Amino acid sequence: MKLTTIVPCYNEQEALELFYEELNRVTKQMSDVTFEILFINDGSKDDTLKIIKKLAKADERVKYVSFSRNFGKEAAIYAGLSNASGDLVAIMDADLQDPPSLLPEMYRAITEEGYDSVATRRVNRKGEPPIRSFFARMFYRIMNKICKTEVVDGARDFRLMNRPFVNALLDMKEYNRFSKGLFGWVGFETKWIEFENVERVAGETKWSFWKLFLYAIDGVVAFSTMPLSFAALVGILMCVISVIAILFIVIRQVCFGGSAFGWPSMACIIIFIGGIQLFCMGILGSYLAKTYLEVKGRPIYICKETNIEKEEK
Image 1 (cartoon, rainbow, N blue to C red):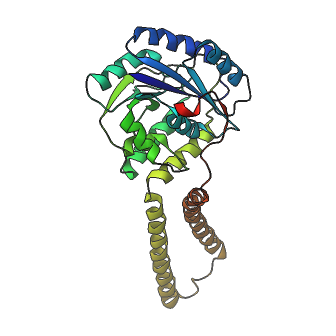
Image 2: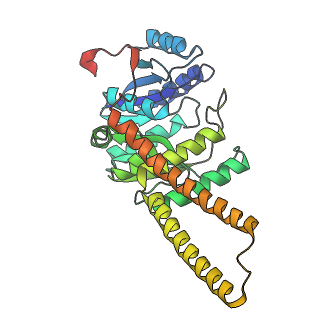
Image 3: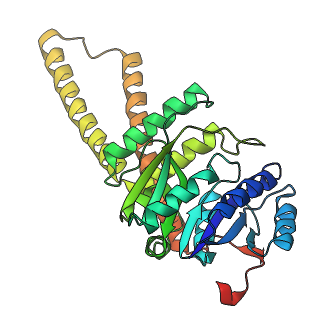
């Protein structure tokens, strides 16, 4: 059986060789499996591509796809799935936060226990800033409340999948991709393996708090229309409050007189309602922007160079 390991890389020159050595150590223990290591260079600006080419020259199992620019991790994952030739396909980060030592257990779960995929999740967030951990947990809670697709708290992109699972993911050719949601949406039998959080072996994370925040918004917009319903509900609620307020002012003016003055309070109310309207327009704009990107039909990524021959794709 052939197993393709997809490794998205963006400025990972410090970690690549360490990752390759660790993965090589694990693959030697799995003598009944043929391995393909597929690096996806996501427009790195350091020596990542040079190191990948060096590894490919020394090891014929190493394949690579190099993008024309940085398209993002989601595009790198899709490119890996599109070019993987294995019966089984794994997705792993190059920073060793996804322990290669779990691969044998994941392989047995599919080949012996009959699962379609094996996914991993962290049982803690040791080493992460407390604020980031708090917002991450809140994101998963919100996602699972407003989405029909289950997104497991602490889930990593690190998972092993059989070919039907991979083909189901490839059938979804949407431009705005959120893999954690797509994994759950396609269904199939999935086994979860828990492990302690592992810090990066080298280099620095490429995910700032702002990038994670935007990624979270992409996930919500991709798998839930609840924000649109929320915007409509807020609009109706504000209309009802406005009608009640107008009736109250009219009745008080008729009964007591001289009570309709007070432009500062009126200005605050107008600004508040205007803010609610802009907020709701922003929600609508997010969905419209995603639709705009989808209908343009642009490719998810552009390959600049690769060592994968056409017949192998």
